[in-house]
Image 1 (cartoon, one colour):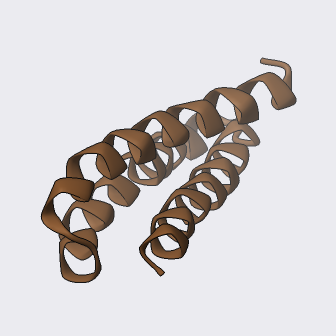
Image 2 (cartoon, helix red, strand yellow):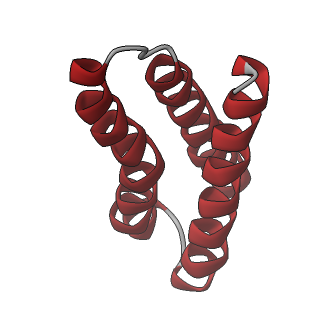
Length: 88
């Protein structure tokens, strides 16, 4: 069961970061840029924060730091994949 919970955190992080990054890269006017940057930062940082707080409730303590590291790497990979997909 713990493995499914960990996979849910990682998959959810990938989905959230990829979608927010794709939305951010569609901004093409100056007045959209600030909101896009804030949304992109939130899409990368908030999954880490949510994983750090919520994983401790559902998983044993030794699993939380490696899971948080995996979520961080997943978030960055999703962001760069969205960047590559948008051809910027």
